[in-house]
Amino acid sequence: AAGGARGGGGGGGVAGSSCGGRCFGPEGVHGLPSPSWYAIAAAAPFFHLCIFVPLPLLLLVFVMRVQDLWAVTVAPPTVHGAEPEISLDLFRPNFFTLLQQRASGDLYLLPLVEGVLYEWLAVCIATLVRLLLYYADVDEKACPPMARYLIRGVRYAYSALFTLHIWLYCSLAMMVCCWVVLAAALDPTRFLAFGTAILTTVSAVAWWTSAMMRAARRFRAWVRTALDRMLHTRASRLAALEEVSRACLGRVSEAV
Image 1: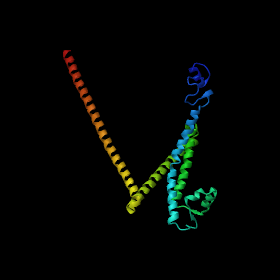
Image 2: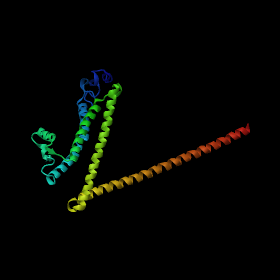
Image 3: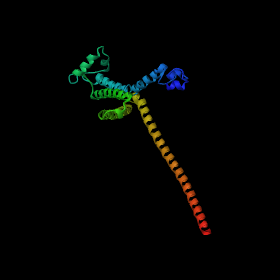
Image 4: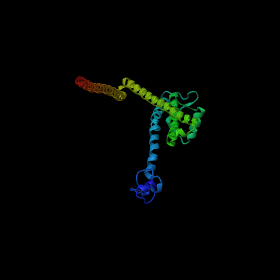
């Protein structure tokens, strides 16, 4: 109604405005959301999921590659009565058979791979719960005390879990980089290029970080010096004004 009044009184809602209901906004024709609003509302959670869920798949792909190399090279035929699992087992026609074999202990995963797998599943489930809570837009002030504490607990728990996840991701990445550098020393013909690239990247990042820190310290010293000069000039002017005012008051008192 307010939009119709602003648009000249004809029609109702946004339909009476100058854009004819086709503008970018939460309301379209006859007060319904416009297609652009639906597109933005669907794109926001999609990009959230793309950031928080598929990216950890890289870590999962790496650890499954480690599992494959171990299973086809140095693993015995059976480990504690179980067959070493490989990545091709994930693409079986019946996926539930794979789950049953894992539950029964017929397939063996390395402890590192199994821990990363469970951690990835926990992060994905926690991310979905956190996104649901975020897009629900719950008003904490209108909630009961127990619900308010529960919402805050979910937020803090997800923050701690995601921090742990990032720490694990960076730790494994650094461990891989260290092994590649060691492999470059043991087999230069295959890994020298990768080791050189890692060392160059680390050296460049360290050099640029130290250079930026030195520039920041110089800039801070320059700003502090400029402020000190400005304050010193203002203080000198104030002192001169005080001397002039005292001299004027003295002359006035002598004249009186």
